[in-house]
Image (cartoon, helix red, strand yellow):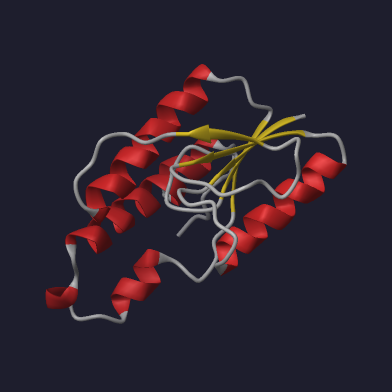
Length: 145
C-alpha cells in the first residue's frame, strides 16, 4: 500500500513525533510504501521512508498551521495514496489520530479572552477535520437527536 502519514513536524522527540516514527518504521519494515508529509524533518527511522516537505510561505504560528493544512489538501488531491493517516492539525485524511485531546476541549477550559489567534485557527481546522460533514463524507451516519 502507498501510505501517507501527515504531521507538520517530524522530529526525534515529542509524543506524537515518537508515535509517527514508530508507525512509519513498522509499516516500512513490512514493505509498505511510506511517505511522511511534513513541514520539517529529521532522519527517518527506516531507510525506505520518504518525505514530502510542504513549506508554504507564512508569517506566525497560526498562519503556518493553516497554510500547511491547505498545502496538504492540495498535495493529497494530486497524489495517489491508498491511505492518508493524519496525526495533527489537518483535515485531509482517511484516518485521524487524536492525541492529547481536542482543541475544543482545551479551549472550553480557558476564558474566551485568553484565546489566541492560533487557538481559533486550530479550532477551525479541527472543525473541518471531524465535523458533521466530514463524518458524512466517510459514510458514517450521525445519531438522531
